[in-house]
Image (cartoon, rainbow, N blue to C red; front, side, top):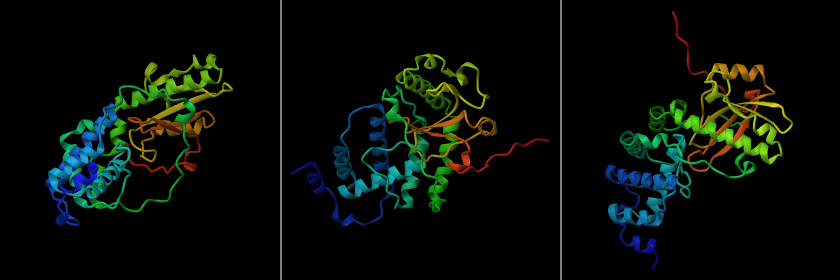
Length: 285
């Protein structure tokens, strides 16, 4: 008899289909984040053993626990956070899970702003991916989830996380140099500059690079630990430079940064690839 079947003997069949209580939800959310932190730090963990321990503690079935783990993944995806591989997001969640995740993140805010200690050495050709297809407006999300996303706003969080932003820029500088070197353009690789670090912010781009033919690339780096569709801020200065120098300016959207960094690029005109929505106002007297 395997571990899942053994654990099944510990579940209370009478609880199948009954609403989860706060103590159960708090237990499974805490367990999920224990596994996530281990995953992000490269520490070994066995999901089945975690599931079995939960079954012993709260009396839910293996299937119910696995499904709830997938619900948690779906919420973290909405929050622009990494989620555990194997627990593919499922969005038919109950409102109570939002409150449990809120409680956990409020007490453990550091998990929101994780920055990886090291960068990938994967070949540049495997790092670049296609830009997501411009989608129709999404269906409204549940009000409780909307409030949770507003509280832990992934766009604002990524914008204010300077450590994450600088790590993403450093990643792109290294990526560009390796990509040019692999194309036998070490002369250009040596000219790649981290403009934001050397000259300060305000140029409208972060990295000066080149394509294989030697044409200039002005790269604005946008980094998130979330998925490819996590929104991000674009400043008036950046948008202005995109319109002024469309053949040179590019966005490099670095995503899944904490676990498996990938990049897609966006070239002007931006409205052909993304939806732009003004959200802030300059107030003056």
